[in-house]
Image (cartoon, rainbow, N blue to C red):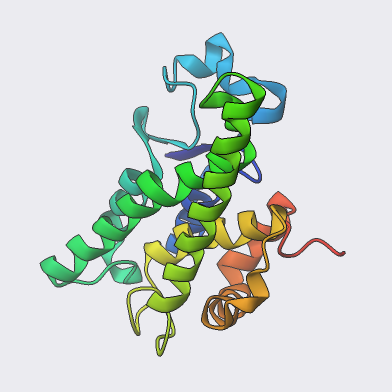
Length: 211
């Protein structure tokens, strides 16, 4: 049995979409960050780091989007969520690691500078540099999509599920996302995928909520 612990609006949306794309049955366990549910004793037994997502596979836990999405692609190879070629598959993992290690922290610094510095002046600097870095990362994603239908080329992969998190965060953070023409066109293709739309609707994501 597959059970996903996630919080609507968080980066766990990536694993939520990936899991839905497999078509496999699974149980949803919302763990609301805004209510501090990730810090409860019950959840810390699932993931002692107090983060989402976490995927329970018959009681065995996997955390981190990159690991969960790679597992799902490998477990359900018939869904073609990752290229069969080992080098191309490794490049998918490489890109997801970049999203996790570089893109995600840049947004955190913009939205939550108090986590990275003490004092108003230092936090203002962190916020400004975070905003600049996140926008540069979005521009890089836009460049990656030039002439492509999907992040890794002609094939939809779990990398696309992960990348959509950051377009949504850009909208939430009031970045001028529509200036990124390739990224925006890709977002529209993503919204046409039934699995993607189902998860965005269920999480009431900013990309589908009425203005």
